[in-house]
Length: 236
Image (cartoon, rainbow, N blue to C red; front, top):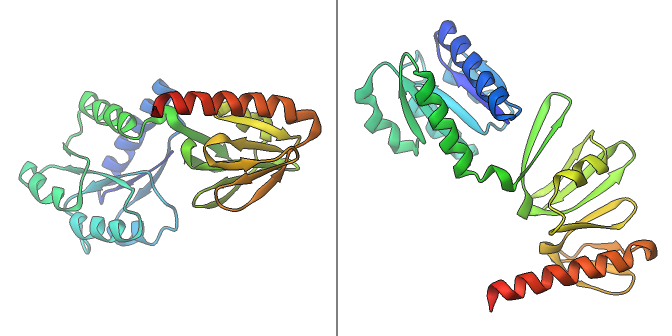
């Protein structure tokens, strides 16, 4: 997961980064932290952050204006304000802040806020992939299929493609077996996005197709049939 700390005090940047990494270690979550000294420097970053810890008062561009610009580019970003001025809390909610923490940050309150964040995104329903220096967080329900390309894997989602330097076997092990299965040697498909299939081909709801390998056909049909039965029992 990718976090940013935006604060014009380096001591605050460092202290908060240490606590965030401690939380990640405690919870078994990969948390990468980028540090910024101003709103301008944060906005120049091309990275899409899961959580931004935002100082309220900064020279140049203050926290509220920075948050507004973040919202324009990434409305899914979770923003947590950190300030020595509790009276600023009300203003921070203009930009849909998730929490407001008072400086100096209390470790217990920070960890409780992070626990609430994890619950809010339903972390168990995410595929988290660490590849080189990046961590990808993908909603499992958004995954159409995963395709092996040598040592790389292409993860096709409803929003586009993500290519990661991770073997398909590793990604397959992280996906729920009730919702995903191999249909051939190099493909793992998601049941939620299959609109139809024949004896040799799978048709996805986005119009794409994948070949159904002969050696995988029986396992695929049984698993997909079980999924359909479970789905129908929930909707009757």
